[in-house]
Length: 299
Image (cartoon, rainbow, N blue to C red; front, top):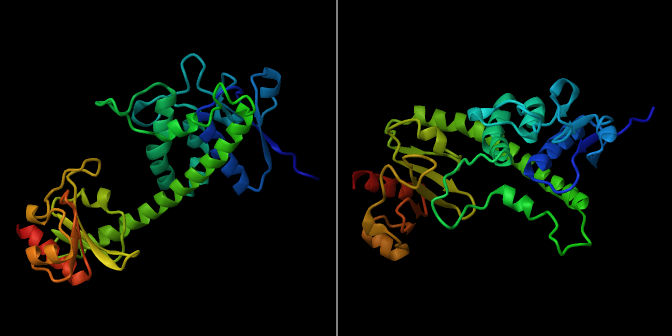
């Protein structure tokens, strides 16, 4: 017998990142399972009742019957950091582990992408805006996908479907990054444990290390190979991965210098560059990078 397409039902009209990513999550889940599906946008209760998965509409949250709305009185519970769930969070709560491949990866995605989108949808400010210039979030991009008052030849439905395809790509890339981040964490931790002088950590690949090494007090600089240009980088370890403040800067006299000038000032014969922000330097060889780091530690 021919399989019937699953019905993914959400509200019609305008859209936001919440319902877009909920749809993207369900689409990836069903594609992994080899299921076909259609996305229906409506507020008609009779059509909503026929849905196999209903999200951001319908007034019901019951994951046992795949109903994922959060607009009803009392909402649909709270997730990470006591932030109210929106449709994305409710769908991710049930299907995230399957879509991401593991509980750990799903947890990273929840913290990085899902919860911020839920917070936005529920009017919860995660960041205090101190300036007239505001950050541009992924939510802003998807708001730009909503047709303007002049675009009478474009419908909300077609732009929603385009947005879901983009959201799928974002979600799949975030999953890959989260998976590789967990692998990198293991490798960086092993290198740290096997390093004698833990002020300088030498990596064999350019692993993301920030959140791993800030758990330890000793590391000041990290050395790593730069694949794209065959050079070696040295970076200062930050006091906090979310800040731009270093535990120790490179010498002030190196700021912004390149090639001959940096080589003369530092005494390192193959030094290439030092950022004027004093958080990064580059050498042609691993040995040169080690010398830059050693000098910086003692400065």
